[in-house]
Length: 585
Image (cartoon, rainbow, N blue to C red; front, side):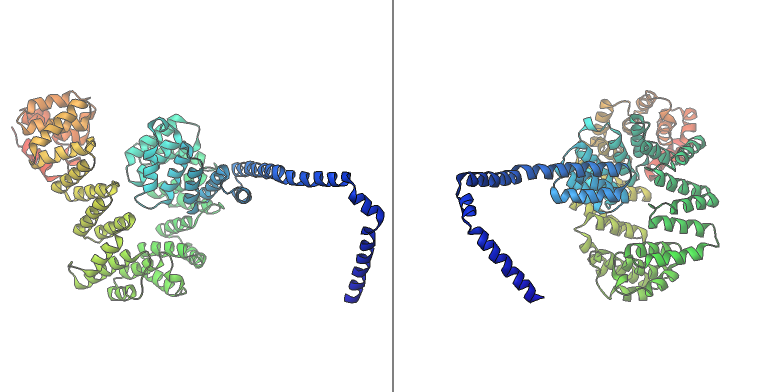
Protein backbone atom coordinates (compact mmCIF):
# COMPACT_ATOMS: atom_id res chain seq x y z
CA UNK A 1 0.00 0.00 0.00
CA UNK A 2 2.85 2.35 0.83
CA UNK A 3 4.50 1.59 -2.52
CA UNK A 4 1.27 2.41 -4.37
CA UNK A 5 0.93 5.70 -2.48
CA UNK A 6 4.54 6.59 -3.36
CA UNK A 7 3.97 5.86 -7.10
CA UNK A 8 0.76 7.94 -7.07
CA UNK A 9 2.58 10.85 -5.45
CA UNK A 10 5.39 10.69 -8.02
CA UNK A 11 2.83 10.71 -10.85
CA UNK A 12 1.04 13.77 -9.59
CA UNK A 13 4.31 15.57 -8.90
CA UNK A 14 5.56 14.94 -12.46
CA UNK A 15 2.32 16.15 -14.07
CA UNK A 16 2.20 19.30 -11.92
CA UNK A 17 5.83 20.09 -12.75
CA UNK A 18 5.18 19.72 -16.48
CA UNK A 19 2.03 21.90 -16.24
CA UNK A 20 3.84 24.72 -14.44
CA UNK A 21 6.63 24.74 -16.99
CA UNK A 22 4.31 24.91 -20.00
CA UNK A 23 4.77 28.15 -21.92
CA UNK A 24 1.06 29.14 -21.84
CA UNK A 25 0.86 28.86 -18.06
CA UNK A 26 4.09 30.81 -17.60
CA UNK A 27 2.80 33.46 -19.98
CA UNK A 28 -0.50 33.77 -18.00
CA UNK A 29 1.39 34.15 -14.74
CA UNK A 30 3.55 36.88 -16.24
CA UNK A 31 0.68 39.11 -17.33
CA UNK A 32 0.12 42.27 -15.23
CA UNK A 33 -3.65 41.65 -15.19
CA UNK A 34 -3.05 38.36 -13.40
CA UNK A 35 -0.92 40.07 -10.78
CA UNK A 36 -3.54 42.77 -10.35
CA UNK A 37 -6.37 40.29 -9.83
CA UNK A 38 -4.20 38.33 -7.43
CA UNK A 39 -3.53 41.46 -5.41
CA UNK A 40 -7.23 42.30 -5.38
CA UNK A 41 -8.07 38.80 -4.21
CA UNK A 42 -5.53 38.93 -1.38
CA UNK A 43 -6.69 42.39 -0.36
CA UNK A 44 -10.31 41.23 -0.33
CA UNK A 45 -9.47 38.29 1.92
CA UNK A 46 -7.50 40.50 4.32
CA UNK A 47 -10.19 43.19 4.39
CA UNK A 48 -12.92 40.62 4.87
CA UNK A 49 -11.11 39.10 7.80
CA UNK A 50 -10.30 42.50 9.31
CA UNK A 51 -13.71 44.13 8.90
CA UNK A 52 -16.14 41.33 8.28
CA UNK A 53 -15.14 38.74 10.88
CA UNK A 54 -15.60 41.04 13.92
CA UNK A 55 -19.06 41.97 12.62
CA UNK A 56 -19.91 38.31 12.23
CA UNK A 57 -18.71 37.60 15.77
CA UNK A 58 -20.72 40.58 17.07
CA UNK A 59 -23.81 39.29 15.29
CA UNK A 60 -23.29 35.83 16.85
CA UNK A 61 -22.74 37.40 20.28
CA UNK A 62 -25.93 39.46 20.09
CA UNK A 63 -27.90 36.53 18.70
CA UNK A 64 -26.77 34.17 21.48
CA UNK A 65 -27.41 36.87 24.10
CA UNK A 66 -30.98 37.39 22.92
CA UNK A 67 -31.51 33.64 22.91
CA UNK A 68 -30.15 33.35 26.48
CA UNK A 69 -32.57 36.03 27.70
CA UNK A 70 -35.47 34.37 25.93
CA UNK A 71 -34.64 30.90 27.26
CA UNK A 72 -34.40 32.17 30.83
CA UNK A 73 -37.71 33.98 30.44
CA UNK A 74 -39.25 30.70 29.29
CA UNK A 75 -37.88 28.94 32.38
CA UNK A 76 -35.18 26.93 30.56
CA UNK A 77 -32.25 27.95 32.78
CA UNK A 78 -29.96 25.12 31.63
CA UNK A 79 -30.05 26.07 27.95
CA UNK A 80 -29.83 29.74 28.88
CA UNK A 81 -26.58 29.05 30.71
CA UNK A 82 -25.23 27.12 27.70
CA UNK A 83 -25.94 30.10 25.45
CA UNK A 84 -24.26 32.40 27.98
CA UNK A 85 -21.11 30.27 27.91
CA UNK A 86 -21.10 30.54 24.12
CA UNK A 87 -21.35 34.32 24.48
CA UNK A 88 -18.41 34.32 26.91
CA UNK A 89 -16.20 32.57 24.34
CA UNK A 90 -16.86 35.56 22.05
CA UNK A 91 -16.87 38.28 24.72
CA UNK A 92 -16.12 37.48 28.36
CA UNK A 93 -17.31 40.95 29.38
CA UNK A 94 -20.81 40.79 27.94
CA UNK A 95 -22.88 42.51 30.64
CA UNK A 96 -26.26 41.11 29.58
CA UNK A 97 -25.05 37.49 29.40
CA UNK A 98 -23.37 37.93 32.79
CA UNK A 99 -26.64 39.13 34.29
CA UNK A 100 -28.57 36.25 32.74
CA UNK A 101 -25.97 33.79 34.02
CA UNK A 102 -26.31 35.31 37.50
CA UNK A 103 -30.11 35.06 37.31
CA UNK A 104 -29.87 31.38 36.35
CA UNK A 105 -27.46 30.59 39.20
CA UNK A 106 -29.67 32.51 41.60
CA UNK A 107 -32.70 30.56 40.48
CA UNK A 108 -30.99 27.33 41.47
CA UNK A 109 -29.80 28.83 44.77
CA UNK A 110 -26.16 28.18 43.90
CA UNK A 111 -23.49 30.05 45.85
CA UNK A 112 -21.77 31.03 42.57
CA UNK A 113 -24.65 33.47 42.00
CA UNK A 114 -23.02 35.93 44.40
CA UNK A 115 -19.84 36.06 42.25
CA UNK A 116 -21.82 36.55 39.04
CA UNK A 117 -23.96 39.27 40.63
CA UNK A 118 -20.81 41.12 41.66
CA UNK A 119 -19.37 40.74 38.16
CA UNK A 120 -22.64 41.92 36.58
CA UNK A 121 -22.54 45.06 38.75
CA UNK A 122 -18.91 45.64 37.76
CA UNK A 123 -19.78 45.45 34.06
CA UNK A 124 -23.00 47.47 34.36
CA UNK A 125 -22.97 49.59 37.55
CA UNK A 126 -26.67 50.45 37.59
CA UNK A 127 -29.30 50.46 40.31
CA UNK A 128 -30.95 47.31 38.93
CA UNK A 129 -27.77 45.29 39.34
CA UNK A 130 -27.14 46.85 42.75
CA UNK A 131 -30.50 45.68 44.06
CA UNK A 132 -30.08 42.26 42.44
CA UNK A 133 -26.71 41.85 44.16
CA UNK A 134 -28.20 42.87 47.52
CA UNK A 135 -31.10 40.43 47.14
CA UNK A 136 -28.75 37.55 46.34
CA UNK A 137 -26.35 38.49 49.13
CA UNK A 138 -29.19 38.45 51.68
CA UNK A 139 -29.93 34.83 50.76
CA UNK A 140 -26.41 33.51 50.32
CA UNK A 141 -24.10 35.62 52.46
CA UNK A 142 -23.40 34.69 56.08
CA UNK A 143 -24.10 36.97 59.02
CA UNK A 144 -23.68 39.95 59.30
CA UNK A 145 -24.53 40.27 55.58
CA UNK A 146 -21.95 43.00 54.83
CA UNK A 147 -22.45 43.07 51.06
CA UNK A 148 -26.23 43.43 51.24
CA UNK A 149 -26.00 46.07 53.98
CA UNK A 150 -23.42 48.13 52.10
CA UNK A 151 -25.04 47.89 48.68
CA UNK A 152 -28.50 48.86 49.96
CA UNK A 153 -26.97 51.69 51.96
CA UNK A 154 -25.22 53.03 48.86
CA UNK A 155 -28.43 53.32 46.82
CA UNK A 156 -29.60 56.92 46.58
CA UNK A 157 -32.96 57.75 48.24
CA UNK A 158 -34.43 58.62 44.85
CA UNK A 159 -34.08 55.00 43.75
CA UNK A 160 -35.36 53.46 46.98
CA UNK A 161 -39.01 53.89 46.04
CA UNK A 162 -39.05 50.74 43.94
CA UNK A 163 -40.59 47.33 44.70
CA UNK A 164 -37.25 45.55 44.18
CA UNK A 165 -35.45 47.78 46.68
CA UNK A 166 -38.20 47.44 49.27
CA UNK A 167 -38.21 43.64 48.91
CA UNK A 168 -34.45 43.49 49.42
CA UNK A 169 -34.64 45.84 52.40
CA UNK A 170 -37.44 43.77 53.91
CA UNK A 171 -35.52 40.53 53.46
CA UNK A 172 -32.45 42.06 55.12
CA UNK A 173 -34.56 43.34 58.02
CA UNK A 174 -35.93 39.82 58.55
CA UNK A 175 -32.38 38.45 58.69
CA UNK A 176 -31.76 40.83 61.59
CA UNK A 177 -35.12 39.81 63.19
CA UNK A 178 -36.53 43.30 62.62
CA UNK A 179 -40.05 42.07 61.86
CA UNK A 180 -41.83 45.41 62.02
CA UNK A 181 -39.30 47.04 59.69
CA UNK A 182 -39.60 44.11 57.29
CA UNK A 183 -43.39 44.35 57.26
CA UNK A 184 -43.23 48.06 56.43
CA UNK A 185 -40.87 47.36 53.54
CA UNK A 186 -43.00 44.54 52.11
CA UNK A 187 -46.12 46.67 52.49
CA UNK A 188 -44.45 49.46 50.53
CA UNK A 189 -43.36 47.01 47.80
CA UNK A 190 -46.93 45.74 47.50
CA UNK A 191 -48.31 49.28 47.22
CA UNK A 192 -45.84 50.06 44.44
CA UNK A 193 -46.70 46.92 42.44
CA UNK A 194 -49.80 45.06 43.58
CA UNK A 195 -49.77 42.64 40.63
CA UNK A 196 -46.31 41.20 41.27
CA UNK A 197 -46.66 37.73 42.84
CA UNK A 198 -43.39 38.19 44.75
CA UNK A 199 -44.78 41.26 46.52
CA UNK A 200 -48.06 39.50 47.28
CA UNK A 201 -46.26 36.47 48.68
CA UNK A 202 -43.79 38.48 50.80
CA UNK A 203 -46.58 40.45 52.43
CA UNK A 204 -48.70 37.34 52.96
CA UNK A 205 -45.81 35.49 54.64
CA UNK A 206 -45.10 38.34 57.05
CA UNK A 207 -48.82 38.66 57.82
CA UNK A 208 -48.94 35.02 58.93
CA UNK A 209 -47.29 36.30 62.12
CA UNK A 210 -50.24 38.57 62.82
CA UNK A 211 -52.40 38.07 65.88
CA UNK A 212 -55.53 38.92 63.90
CA UNK A 213 -57.19 35.70 62.71
CA UNK A 214 -58.78 37.33 59.66
CA UNK A 215 -55.40 38.64 58.52
CA UNK A 216 -53.91 35.17 58.95
CA UNK A 217 -56.78 33.55 57.02
CA UNK A 218 -56.47 36.06 54.17
CA UNK A 219 -52.71 35.47 54.01
CA UNK A 220 -53.24 31.71 53.91
CA UNK A 221 -55.67 32.07 51.02
CA UNK A 222 -53.22 34.27 49.12
CA UNK A 223 -50.43 31.72 49.53
CA UNK A 224 -52.67 28.86 48.42
CA UNK A 225 -53.47 30.78 45.24
CA UNK A 226 -49.74 31.29 44.63
CA UNK A 227 -48.74 27.64 45.13
CA UNK A 228 -48.88 26.89 41.41
CA UNK A 229 -47.11 30.06 40.40
CA UNK A 230 -43.85 29.19 38.63
CA UNK A 231 -42.04 32.14 40.18
CA UNK A 232 -42.98 31.88 43.86
CA UNK A 233 -44.80 28.55 44.15
CA UNK A 234 -42.07 26.78 46.12
CA UNK A 235 -41.72 29.60 48.64
CA UNK A 236 -45.48 29.86 49.06
CA UNK A 237 -45.76 26.11 49.69
CA UNK A 238 -42.96 26.17 52.27
CA UNK A 239 -44.66 29.02 54.09
CA UNK A 240 -47.95 27.13 54.18
CA UNK A 241 -46.17 24.05 55.53
CA UNK A 242 -44.65 26.10 58.34
CA UNK A 243 -48.01 27.69 59.11
CA UNK A 244 -49.70 24.27 59.20
CA UNK A 245 -47.03 23.01 61.58
CA UNK A 246 -47.57 26.00 63.87
CA UNK A 247 -51.29 25.19 63.97
CA UNK A 248 -50.57 21.53 64.67
CA UNK A 249 -52.23 20.45 61.43
CA UNK A 250 -49.68 17.73 60.61
CA UNK A 251 -51.91 16.01 58.05
CA UNK A 252 -52.13 19.18 55.97
CA UNK A 253 -48.41 19.82 56.43
CA UNK A 254 -47.56 16.32 55.22
CA UNK A 255 -49.75 16.68 52.14
CA UNK A 256 -48.14 19.97 51.23
CA UNK A 257 -44.66 18.59 51.90
CA UNK A 258 -45.20 15.61 49.60
CA UNK A 259 -46.40 17.98 46.92
CA UNK A 260 -43.27 20.06 47.44
CA UNK A 261 -40.93 17.07 47.12
CA UNK A 262 -42.44 16.18 43.73
CA UNK A 263 -41.24 19.51 42.38
CA UNK A 264 -38.00 19.15 40.40
CA UNK A 265 -36.68 22.33 42.06
CA UNK A 266 -37.12 21.10 45.63
CA UNK A 267 -33.97 20.94 47.75
CA UNK A 268 -32.45 18.66 50.36
CA UNK A 269 -33.74 21.07 53.01
CA UNK A 270 -37.24 20.16 51.87
CA UNK A 271 -36.47 16.51 52.65
CA UNK A 272 -35.39 17.48 56.16
CA UNK A 273 -38.59 19.50 56.53
CA UNK A 274 -40.54 16.37 55.60
CA UNK A 275 -38.61 14.45 58.26
CA UNK A 276 -39.61 17.09 60.81
CA UNK A 277 -43.27 16.64 59.89
CA UNK A 278 -43.14 12.83 59.96
CA UNK A 279 -41.40 12.81 63.34
CA UNK A 280 -43.73 15.39 64.88
CA UNK A 281 -46.78 13.44 63.72
CA UNK A 282 -45.31 10.05 64.80
CA UNK A 283 -45.80 8.75 61.27
CA UNK A 284 -45.08 5.09 60.53
CA UNK A 285 -43.26 6.26 57.39
CA UNK A 286 -40.62 8.11 59.39
CA UNK A 287 -38.00 5.34 59.70
CA UNK A 288 -38.15 4.42 56.02
CA UNK A 289 -37.92 8.04 54.87
CA UNK A 290 -35.00 8.70 57.25
CA UNK A 291 -33.11 5.73 55.83
CA UNK A 292 -33.83 6.93 52.31
CA UNK A 293 -32.57 10.39 53.23
CA UNK A 294 -29.40 8.98 54.77
CA UNK A 295 -28.67 7.13 51.52
CA UNK A 296 -29.21 10.26 49.44
CA UNK A 297 -26.79 12.21 51.68
CA UNK A 298 -23.86 9.78 51.40
CA UNK A 299 -22.36 11.44 48.34
CA UNK A 300 -22.52 15.05 49.58
CA UNK A 301 -20.76 16.47 52.63
CA UNK A 302 -23.16 19.42 52.67
CA UNK A 303 -26.24 17.18 52.73
CA UNK A 304 -24.68 14.79 55.24
CA UNK A 305 -23.77 17.68 57.53
CA UNK A 306 -27.26 19.14 57.32
CA UNK A 307 -28.86 15.77 58.10
CA UNK A 308 -26.53 14.98 61.01
CA UNK A 309 -27.06 18.46 62.47
CA UNK A 310 -30.82 17.99 62.34
CA UNK A 311 -30.61 14.53 63.91
CA UNK A 312 -28.49 15.91 66.75
CA UNK A 313 -31.05 18.63 67.40
CA UNK A 314 -34.01 16.27 67.25
CA UNK A 315 -32.86 13.86 69.95
CA UNK A 316 -31.22 11.32 67.65
CA UNK A 317 -27.56 12.09 68.32
CA UNK A 318 -26.75 8.43 68.98
CA UNK A 319 -28.16 7.36 65.63
CA UNK A 320 -26.42 10.29 63.92
CA UNK A 321 -23.06 9.37 65.46
CA UNK A 322 -23.43 5.73 64.44
CA UNK A 323 -24.27 6.77 60.88
CA UNK A 324 -21.32 9.19 60.73
CA UNK A 325 -18.91 6.49 61.94
CA UNK A 326 -19.92 4.28 59.03
CA UNK A 327 -19.12 6.95 56.45
CA UNK A 328 -15.61 7.07 54.87
CA UNK A 329 -13.16 8.85 57.25
CA UNK A 330 -11.97 11.28 54.58
CA UNK A 331 -15.57 12.17 53.79
CA UNK A 332 -16.42 13.04 57.41
CA UNK A 333 -13.61 15.62 57.48
CA UNK A 334 -15.33 17.75 54.84
CA UNK A 335 -17.67 20.72 55.23
CA UNK A 336 -19.53 20.94 58.54
CA UNK A 337 -19.34 17.21 59.26
CA UNK A 338 -16.60 17.62 61.93
CA UNK A 339 -18.85 20.04 63.83
CA UNK A 340 -21.82 17.70 63.49
CA UNK A 341 -19.76 14.80 64.85
CA UNK A 342 -18.50 16.79 67.83
CA UNK A 343 -22.00 18.09 68.47
CA UNK A 344 -23.29 14.50 68.55
CA UNK A 345 -20.82 13.69 71.34
CA UNK A 346 -21.95 16.84 73.18
CA UNK A 347 -25.63 15.94 72.82
CA UNK A 348 -24.89 12.52 74.33
CA UNK A 349 -22.83 14.05 77.15
CA UNK A 350 -19.77 12.04 76.10
CA UNK A 351 -17.31 14.80 77.02
CA UNK A 352 -14.14 12.74 77.18
CA UNK A 353 -14.85 11.16 73.79
CA UNK A 354 -15.67 14.61 72.41
CA UNK A 355 -12.40 16.07 73.70
CA UNK A 356 -10.41 13.19 72.25
CA UNK A 357 -12.11 13.64 68.88
CA UNK A 358 -11.42 17.40 68.87
CA UNK A 359 -7.72 16.87 69.61
CA UNK A 360 -7.18 14.49 66.67
CA UNK A 361 -6.78 17.03 63.87
CA UNK A 362 -7.22 20.65 62.87
CA UNK A 363 -10.33 22.05 61.21
CA UNK A 364 -9.11 24.42 58.48
CA UNK A 365 -11.31 27.50 58.51
CA UNK A 366 -13.19 26.31 61.61
CA UNK A 367 -10.47 26.36 64.26
CA UNK A 368 -12.33 28.91 66.38
CA UNK A 369 -15.27 26.52 66.68
CA UNK A 370 -13.02 23.53 67.40
CA UNK A 371 -11.29 25.33 70.28
CA UNK A 372 -14.63 26.66 71.58
CA UNK A 373 -15.98 23.11 71.71
CA UNK A 374 -12.80 21.99 73.47
CA UNK A 375 -13.48 24.68 76.09
CA UNK A 376 -17.04 23.35 76.43
CA UNK A 377 -15.79 19.79 76.97
CA UNK A 378 -13.30 20.99 79.59
CA UNK A 379 -15.95 23.00 81.43
CA UNK A 380 -18.51 20.21 81.46
CA UNK A 381 -15.95 17.75 82.83
CA UNK A 382 -14.65 20.11 85.54
CA UNK A 383 -18.12 21.36 86.44
CA UNK A 384 -16.96 24.98 86.72
CA UNK A 385 -16.21 27.87 84.38
CA UNK A 386 -12.57 28.88 84.66
CA UNK A 387 -9.77 30.41 82.65
CA UNK A 388 -9.37 28.33 79.55
CA UNK A 389 -6.51 28.33 77.07
CA UNK A 390 -8.85 26.65 74.59
CA UNK A 391 -11.34 29.53 74.82
CA UNK A 392 -8.57 32.10 74.43
CA UNK A 393 -7.40 30.27 71.32
CA UNK A 394 -10.96 30.26 69.98
CA UNK A 395 -11.17 34.05 70.37
CA UNK A 396 -7.80 34.53 68.68
CA UNK A 397 -8.77 32.42 65.67
CA UNK A 398 -12.11 34.23 65.35
CA UNK A 399 -10.67 37.74 65.65
CA UNK A 400 -10.18 38.32 61.91
CA UNK A 401 -13.68 37.26 60.88
CA UNK A 402 -16.92 39.05 61.86
CA UNK A 403 -18.87 35.89 61.08
CA UNK A 404 -16.61 33.79 63.33
CA UNK A 405 -16.94 36.30 66.18
CA UNK A 406 -20.71 36.29 65.85
CA UNK A 407 -20.77 32.49 65.89
CA UNK A 408 -18.51 32.42 68.95
CA UNK A 409 -20.71 34.90 70.81
CA UNK A 410 -23.83 32.86 70.03
CA UNK A 411 -22.14 29.66 71.20
CA UNK A 412 -21.10 31.30 74.46
CA UNK A 413 -24.62 32.59 75.09
CA UNK A 414 -26.14 29.19 74.24
CA UNK A 415 -23.76 27.41 76.61
CA UNK A 416 -24.59 29.76 79.48
CA UNK A 417 -21.48 31.93 79.36
CA UNK A 418 -22.91 35.48 79.12
CA UNK A 419 -19.68 37.17 80.25
CA UNK A 420 -17.71 35.47 77.50
CA UNK A 421 -20.39 36.35 74.97
CA UNK A 422 -20.22 40.00 76.01
CA UNK A 423 -16.43 40.08 75.77
CA UNK A 424 -16.54 38.65 72.25
CA UNK A 425 -19.20 41.14 71.14
CA UNK A 426 -17.34 44.14 72.57
CA UNK A 427 -14.23 42.91 70.79
CA UNK A 428 -16.21 42.70 67.54
CA UNK A 429 -17.61 46.22 68.08
CA UNK A 430 -14.08 47.61 68.48
CA UNK A 431 -12.53 45.69 65.58
CA UNK A 432 -15.40 46.33 63.16
CA UNK A 433 -16.84 49.77 64.01
CA UNK A 434 -18.57 49.99 60.62
CA UNK A 435 -20.86 47.08 61.45
CA UNK A 436 -23.87 47.53 63.71
CA UNK A 437 -24.64 43.93 64.68
CA UNK A 438 -22.24 43.68 67.69
CA UNK A 439 -23.92 46.58 69.49
CA UNK A 440 -27.39 45.30 68.56
CA UNK A 441 -26.52 41.85 69.95
CA UNK A 442 -25.09 43.41 73.11
CA UNK A 443 -28.22 45.49 73.61
CA UNK A 444 -30.42 42.40 73.27
CA UNK A 445 -28.17 40.47 75.64
CA UNK A 446 -28.22 43.18 78.31
CA UNK A 447 -31.97 43.70 77.91
CA UNK A 448 -32.53 40.00 78.53
CA UNK A 449 -30.51 40.31 81.73
CA UNK A 450 -32.23 43.53 82.82
CA UNK A 451 -28.77 45.13 82.84
CA UNK A 452 -29.50 48.86 82.52
CA UNK A 453 -25.86 49.90 82.93
CA UNK A 454 -24.83 47.54 80.15
CA UNK A 455 -27.52 48.92 77.84
CA UNK A 456 -26.35 52.47 78.62
CA UNK A 457 -22.79 51.49 77.72
CA UNK A 458 -24.06 50.19 74.38
CA UNK A 459 -26.03 53.39 73.72
CA UNK A 460 -22.94 55.47 74.54
CA UNK A 461 -20.84 53.41 72.10
CA UNK A 462 -23.46 53.81 69.38
CA UNK A 463 -23.62 57.57 70.00
CA UNK A 464 -19.83 57.90 69.92
CA UNK A 465 -19.78 56.04 66.61
CA UNK A 466 -22.47 58.25 65.09
CA UNK A 467 -23.31 61.48 66.98
CA UNK A 468 -26.18 62.10 64.53
CA UNK A 469 -27.94 58.86 65.49
CA UNK A 470 -31.10 60.19 67.14
CA UNK A 471 -32.22 56.83 68.48
CA UNK A 472 -28.85 56.21 70.14
CA UNK A 473 -28.97 59.72 71.58
CA UNK A 474 -32.47 59.09 72.97
CA UNK A 475 -31.50 55.71 74.43
CA UNK A 476 -28.45 57.17 76.12
CA UNK A 477 -30.55 59.95 77.63
CA UNK A 478 -33.33 57.63 78.83
CA UNK A 479 -30.98 55.07 80.37
CA UNK A 480 -28.88 57.78 82.01
CA UNK A 481 -32.04 59.23 83.59
CA UNK A 482 -33.09 55.82 84.88
CA UNK A 483 -29.65 55.36 86.46
CA UNK A 484 -29.43 59.01 87.65
CA UNK A 485 -26.09 59.24 85.86
CA UNK A 486 -24.89 62.18 83.74
CA UNK A 487 -28.35 63.69 84.13
CA UNK A 488 -27.33 67.17 82.95
CA UNK A 489 -26.31 65.85 79.51
CA UNK A 490 -29.31 63.50 79.46
CA UNK A 491 -31.73 66.38 80.10
CA UNK A 492 -30.08 68.37 77.30
CA UNK A 493 -30.38 65.51 74.79
CA UNK A 494 -34.00 64.81 75.78
CA UNK A 495 -35.02 68.46 75.37
CA UNK A 496 -33.28 68.83 71.99
CA UNK A 497 -34.83 65.67 70.54
CA UNK A 498 -38.31 66.62 71.72
CA UNK A 499 -37.98 70.15 70.37
CA UNK A 500 -37.01 68.79 66.95
CA UNK A 501 -39.73 66.11 66.78
CA UNK A 502 -42.43 66.71 69.43
CA UNK A 503 -44.82 64.15 67.89
CA UNK A 504 -42.35 61.28 68.12
CA UNK A 505 -43.70 59.15 71.01
CA UNK A 506 -40.26 57.76 71.95
CA UNK A 507 -38.65 61.19 72.18
CA UNK A 508 -41.71 62.54 73.98
CA UNK A 509 -41.61 59.82 76.65
CA UNK A 510 -37.89 60.40 77.28
CA UNK A 511 -38.45 64.15 77.63
CA UNK A 512 -41.37 63.51 79.98
CA UNK A 513 -39.09 61.28 82.09
CA UNK A 514 -36.53 64.09 82.19
CA UNK A 515 -39.19 66.49 83.44
CA UNK A 516 -40.30 63.94 86.03
CA UNK A 517 -36.72 63.61 87.32
CA UNK A 518 -36.59 67.41 87.64
CA UNK A 519 -39.78 67.47 89.73
CA UNK A 520 -41.87 68.84 86.84
CA UNK A 521 -44.35 65.98 86.53
CA UNK A 522 -47.31 68.17 85.48
CA UNK A 523 -45.34 69.47 82.51
CA UNK A 524 -44.49 65.86 81.64
CA UNK A 525 -48.20 64.94 81.70
CA UNK A 526 -48.87 67.73 79.20
CA UNK A 527 -46.17 66.29 76.91
CA UNK A 528 -48.02 62.97 76.87
CA UNK A 529 -51.43 64.59 76.35
CA UNK A 530 -50.16 66.30 73.23
CA UNK A 531 -49.72 62.86 71.65
CA UNK A 532 -52.53 60.93 69.90
CA UNK A 533 -54.65 58.95 72.37
CA UNK A 534 -53.97 55.69 70.50
CA UNK A 535 -50.25 55.97 71.19
CA UNK A 536 -50.83 56.23 74.93
CA UNK A 537 -52.44 52.77 74.89
CA UNK A 538 -49.17 51.10 73.97
CA UNK A 539 -47.98 49.25 77.12
CA UNK A 540 -44.59 50.98 77.36
CA UNK A 541 -46.08 54.44 76.79
CA UNK A 542 -48.96 53.68 79.15
CA UNK A 543 -46.56 52.73 81.95
CA UNK A 544 -44.60 56.00 81.73
CA UNK A 545 -47.81 58.03 81.37
CA UNK A 546 -49.13 56.35 84.52
CA UNK A 547 -45.91 57.17 86.39
CA UNK A 548 -46.22 60.85 85.42
CA UNK A 549 -49.94 61.00 86.27
CA UNK A 550 -49.32 59.51 89.72
CA UNK A 551 -46.45 61.93 90.35
CA UNK A 552 -48.72 64.82 89.30
CA UNK A 553 -51.24 63.74 91.95
CA UNK A 554 -53.83 61.98 89.76
CA UNK A 555 -53.58 58.40 91.11
CA UNK A 556 -57.05 57.42 89.87
CA UNK A 557 -56.27 58.30 86.25
CA UNK A 558 -52.86 56.67 86.59
CA UNK A 559 -54.11 53.25 87.71
CA UNK A 560 -55.35 51.77 84.38
CA UNK A 561 -52.13 52.85 82.70
CA UNK A 562 -49.91 51.46 85.43
CA UNK A 563 -51.73 48.14 85.30
CA UNK A 564 -50.36 47.62 81.78
CA UNK A 565 -46.73 47.98 82.89
CA UNK A 566 -46.18 44.25 83.39
CA UNK A 567 -46.56 43.76 79.64
CA UNK A 568 -43.79 46.14 78.68
CA UNK A 569 -41.16 47.06 81.25
CA UNK A 570 -38.13 44.82 81.76
CA UNK A 571 -35.54 47.03 83.46
CA UNK A 572 -35.42 47.02 87.27
CA UNK A 573 -35.30 50.84 87.47
CA UNK A 574 -38.49 51.07 85.42
CA UNK A 575 -40.23 48.54 87.63
CA UNK A 576 -39.15 50.51 90.68
CA UNK A 577 -40.70 53.67 89.25
CA UNK A 578 -43.97 51.81 88.65
CA UNK A 579 -44.05 50.41 92.19
CA UNK A 580 -43.40 53.87 93.58
CA UNK A 581 -46.23 55.28 91.44
CA UNK A 582 -48.64 52.57 92.58
CA UNK A 583 -47.83 53.42 96.19
CA UNK A 584 -48.76 57.07 95.75
CA UNK A 585 -52.12 58.15 97.16
